[in-house]
Length: 540
Image (cartoon, rainbow, N blue to C red):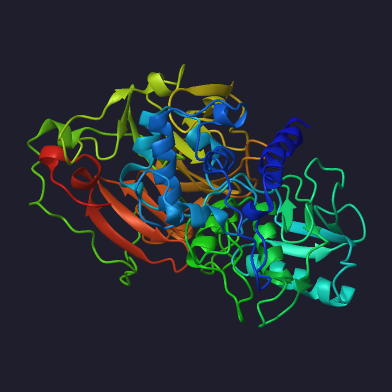
């Protein structure tokens, strides 16, 4: 109930924005567009470019924060970055668009200094993902079809099925129509319709959707809905439905111009396909479509393996990362320090644990050559000393030591700063056989979490962990050599920046594993890429 309430609140914040002005909304190309000069400060306030406290009040923003907000908006919409309002910026604000925030509110709920760091050099933000559904077999129900547009209900259903098919083709998700009890209810409504976000008639807000775990999607039935129209008149139902279903599945807006989740309405596009950014975004939540793993026996062997795999796939998908210096010397003590856990944070920082300390990667800043370490407890109060493993899903970090697991969340939905200890228990690794010890962990999505480690004195085992119930999946224990062929048994750290790849650290080297093709590249030197400084310099 609490989670559902949070989702409703998040949707209300998203959808109430759409009542600002019709010129703000994801509106259609109806021949002549409305040319409404929106209030630029209100625009920045309501679409997430200013800190949250400006959203709930009418106080004038600080000039420095306003200038920063203009820069972030200009970068987001791919226009010249000036930091002030000009004709190009005003024109961009007047474009037809969706009513949801362009920027995660948690990004803006920080100090100006933190925001500048996050958007340093104003690099693209790309896809934004929230938490998704806890199941992959989703159901939908059409409560009512359009009554104002001459589209038969059978065609509306066909367009809905096509829109869902875009997302199911790139994920393990399936969608099935039901007559009651659906995960995603779909309806065509007008004006005030009971969710606190009334539609405003033609040329205004086209549609809105609840994020998981609600999913309800509404279309404004005062719009001129069309299908496959090449005249530019009306609103293409398929494109809008696919965009809104992206929200219903957990995606926010992207700043990639050709992405379906870009804020502005794309118009009719023949043979439309999801962009790579859309695919990366949805797979960051649910993973890729099911693939056949290499054939293997259904049960573990009774004799534990005593040797490493004798063969390693030779096909590589990526070139060797450039190494700009000579091979590192092991005479430097910092190059021999052992680290025991690593994860990528929500803001893109790669963080690594070593005993009591937490480090940015590389440990030595390549520009300043300054040491990046700090006490881990500064970010994670009461964190266990010398954790065995760590993994991260959007909004939550899990720390493991022996059979104990701690769960941390962001404080006040901030991307940076101290975290809040939400749970600390000795029973969350239920399902691990006695004698097992986790040495590394990685989350590809919130539904796909792997634990790596030892059983007895033998390394080289992997388990699947179910976040929904805090248990190791029954029967999931397997050999690393079978589940991830080509990866050494002694995995000490693992992390993923994309569900299609896991980076493993083992025996002072690191390896790239392609989860789709099962290709392995490596080994690569650990110290130049992860430590830097006198150890050398290389890109991960």
